[in-house]
Image 1 (cartoon, rainbow, N blue to C red):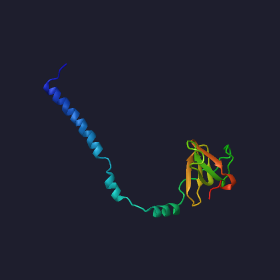
Image 2: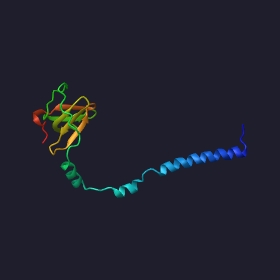
Image 3: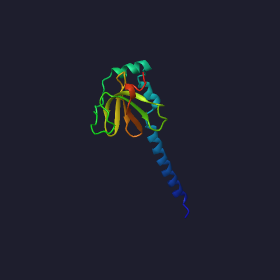
Image 4: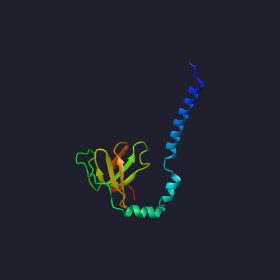
Length: 133
């Protein structure tokens, strides 16, 4: 079935109108360059100072007494990804949270790191610090 010239033109106008609407939506997205002007830039030292001086905002999850890892609050703990060669990327810290879905350790500087249970090996570090200084 062939279109008359009027039908063809009407079809083209509808397509163009739909394309214009799409482009208008895209143009309404936030402009990163403009938003970046409003951002406060911190040096690494200032960011570290601000982070470490802030209050801890996430509720404590405690230690699940039924967890099979048999770890206690305050245990020096080693956490490392299960998809890497053992010992390649260990993270050491004092255990402050452990439940069915995550493990939380506190570093010596007070920063707390949250790790999912899936995909990580969690264990009590040997000799208190597992050779880590």
